[in-house]
Image (cartoon, rainbow, N blue to C red; front, top):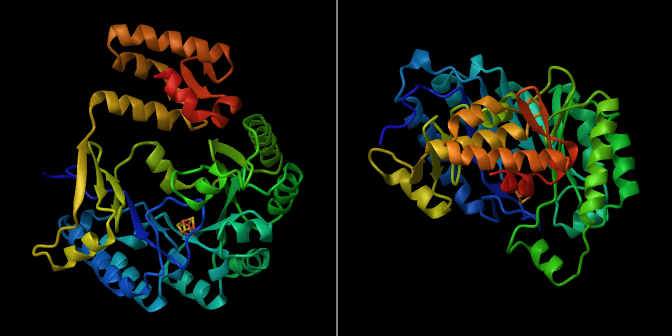
Length: 385
Ligand code: SF4
C-alpha cells in the first residue's frame, strides 16, 4: 500500500514515550521505568524518520511544523537529542519550519536544557502544569511541584519566548475557588497560549479505580459547565481568545501544529503508537514497544503499523467532530451536500433539536458548538450524527 502519495507532509509528530512515573489519569502510550529501552528506541526512531524522509526528493521535504510529544520528551537525553535534531535538519528541512514545539514537564526545566533546546531549534514549549496544588499533584502521581512551575516560568523566557501551558479542569481536590485563583495567577505569567483539558477518567487507570471505589469525588457536570463558562470569559478578558474547545491564545499564537489536525491536513507521526494521516488513510504505528523496537532489525526498515482507508461517511464525521470543536465552525452546505437524502432529513432534525436546546448555534451557513455544547461535546456529537 502506497501512502503519502500527495508528497512529504507539512506536519511531523515525533513520540518520545518514556516517563519517569505514570500519572494516575494517563492512558497515553507512555512507559515508566524503561531506561534500558531508551537507547534502542532512539535508534529506531532515528531510522524510522530517516527511512521515511528518504523516500521523497530532498527538495520537497519542507514541513511547516514539527511537534515532539510524549511521554516526557523533556527527559530525552541531550546528546541523543542533538543527533536527532541534526537528522531533522539534514533530512527533513527543519530549518524551514514555522513552528517546532516540544512538550515538557516543569520539573525538567533547567537552564542547561533550555540552552540546548534553543540551540537545537525548538521555538515553542508546551508545559504540563495541570494545577498548582502540591497535594493534588502528589496524589495524581505527578512529578512536578508548584515550585518547579515557578522556577520554569522564571527561566524559560530567557531562551524560548513562545510558551504554552496545559491545565486540567475538574481534578479531584481542586476547588472552584482554587481554580479561579489559579487562572488569575497564570494570566500574569509570560505565556501566550493556554490549553484547558477536561479531566477524563480512562478505564483501568489508577484514578478510574479510585473513582469506582469512591475514594475521590469529582465535581458535578453542572459545576464543570459553569466553571468552563467562567474560564472562557476570564481568559478572553485577559487577552486569551478561544479558538478551539480546549485552546486559548494571544493574538498570533495559535498552535499551527494542532490546527493542522483539526483541519484534517496530512501529518506523519513517528514512534511507538503514533498516528498519521495522509489525506486518504489513517495509519497507526504498533503501540507495543517490543514490536516497534524489533523493526530496527528489519531490511528494508519498516515499522509495524495498521491502516484504515477513510470512507466518505467517516470523512464527514471527522469534518463534523473536528470542525465543531473550533470557533470557526463547520460549513453546513458542505455537510448537507455530502449526505444521502434520507440521512439529510435525520441530520436536520437532530441539528434543529440541538440548536433549540442551546448546544449548537447556526450563523448563516456555519454551525458551531455553543459554550454549553463545548462542555458536553461528546454527547452533542453523538446526538447530532
Ligand atoms: S507525564 Fe504525560 S504521558 Fe507521562 S504519564 Fe504523565 S500524563 Fe502520561
